[in-house]
Length: 278
Image (cartoon, rainbow, N blue to C red; front, side, top):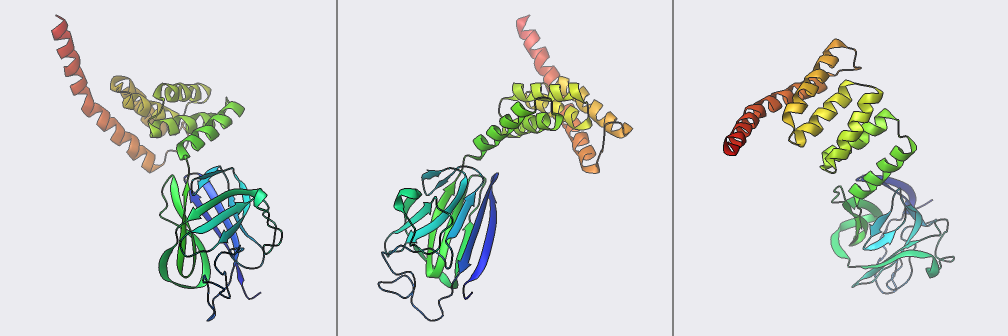
């Protein structure tokens, strides 16, 4: 086929986006103009060539401000000089625009195009990627149409972890991963500690002992965290706590050093408080 097939996979936060499309080239013709040979203004365009371009997401997301459930969609657009209409449609298996029905749209948004360097070949892609956002770009000729994609990655992550936890309440890796995420996000540390304790009760390891020590340290309970961190280090050194890679050993040793440096400050604070009470 004259328009070659292409596919893109892009992860944003924990969400995977997949695009499949065909890439026509301009070859001296006009594009995005009144009555142009390719994608004329104010007419529905398949936004690619051959079969409809498909846009797939593994979780719910926002497409230019429109909430869209996880799923696979066909991408359409209506080019215009001032504002493009960009569309995601439920019917992902269609060619051209003959079978398009507006009633099956899940998102229909207005986007302001911008000028860009010249693209001879039609190009789709993602840019400016963060943990919660990205721009989905439609580019051809000297025009780029940027659609803002946004997600609540923290909510999606916690929802996924809690779902797995409900399905596998005695699974040590699930308990540890949920606890570790809460620690990294600084969310509900008492719950993180409870999950780490449960994991330790089921199968003690260097990983979950060190996890517990880090949670206690973050909660300001340094005196409680230090002996647990030392126990994790000793367990790793003995070889009975599973694999003990050098990076983890160095991390625990650094953590113990940091905790020890805090202890004199904690003791002095306790003395000061007791002195005031007297």
